[in-house]
Image (tube, rainbow, N blue to C red; front, side):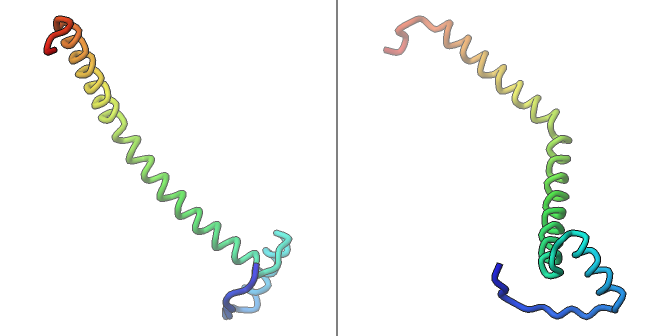
Length: 91
């Protein structure tokens, strides 16, 4: 990955040591470790948003299923009505 911008972050020596240690445990240079953590945070936020949408959908599921059942019943009723029409009617 080619660097496109440089970021200077001020932190305490203890924070820098902790960051270096985390990157080392991950087997990554600090810059790559930070980039991956940023992406992971973005994914975490997206996951939270998706989970909220799914929870909303789950809450509406009974009403959605009832609407589908009503639509199917209406379609079946219309089909039965059409079947009762004399063949060739309207021609």
